[in-house]
Amino acid sequence: MKFAVLVFPGSNCDIDCYKAVEDTVGEQVDYVFHTATDLSAYDAILVPGGFSYGDYLRCGAIAQFAPVMAEVKKAAEEGKFILGICNGFQILTEAGLLPGALIRNNSLKFRCHQVGLTVENAKTGFTNDFAQGEVITIPIAHGEGSYYVDDETLAALKANDQIVFRYAGDNPNGSVDNIAGVCNEAGNVVGMMPHPERAVKEILGSADGARMFTSVLNAWRERNGAASIR
Amino acid sequence: MKAKVYVTIKQNVLDPQGNAVQGALHTLGFNEVGKVRIGKYLELDLDTNDRAQAEEQLKVMCEKLLANTVVEDYRFELEG
Image 1 (tube, rainbow over the protein chains, first blue to last red):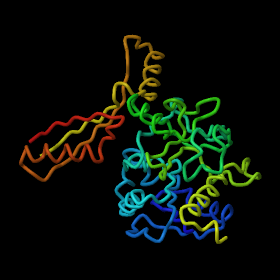
Image 2 (image 1 turned 180 degrees about the vertical axis):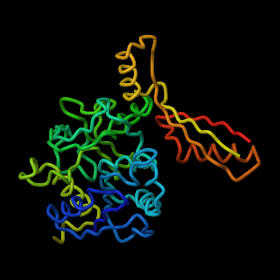
Image 3 (image 1 turned 135 degrees about the vertical axis):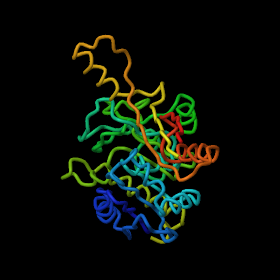
Image 4 (image 1 turned 90 degrees about the horizontal axis):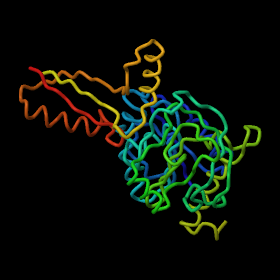
């Protein structure tokens, strides 16, 4: 399996994502620059956190038009596995690959600490290694992570099982319905504010994030029938 | 031709910055202040004299980039 970690000007969790792939599943992983125009070699695309283009105008607003994003859209349509983390989630919503928007935390503070997350959908390509309803620990680090959708879209998200994670306990940012992560209708594109790549070993405070990477490897193997030849 | 673009947070979306500024104004004694909403103001120089075309282009610019219509509204004025 081959992973791409996208790198925009201002990405700062790209190295963490790269190392997380190496340390959790040990599959091939490449940094792919925002100017790239071909992602056909990759099975999974990680859109990392950071402050792409300085968060100018809005978080992710300018990154959505980077050349590589046309390829990300194509990959999404092809059913490839795409995970947007923090700024990556903001970019995917701005690009229209995921519904909703991320706005300023209701506290107005940059919140950087561990949170409990309830796994609301353990069937996506990135969550199949969790149990449905399991509470996991993953850190957040954002100032603009309050997920917003209107009532109509929220009803659709619930009906289609697109809410992937909810904050368990205190909601750190005021997001609608305590939402921390969502997926597209097909379930191959997932976006979340918490940082699973920062929670891949106990020494980091939690190893729960590692299972997002093992999940996608499982999903890829299942899709490609590779499990039988392991 | 000059364009002034105003991007504002939709009425049903929470504006924590506006709430904080409202609180600060109350602290300063401006108790007549009700709701405060913070938005963005952009000035654009457009290399065209065709008003209709400018309006059409501005609408596309707002929809594509300048506003996120999930959470924001926009309006613009043309001068010159």
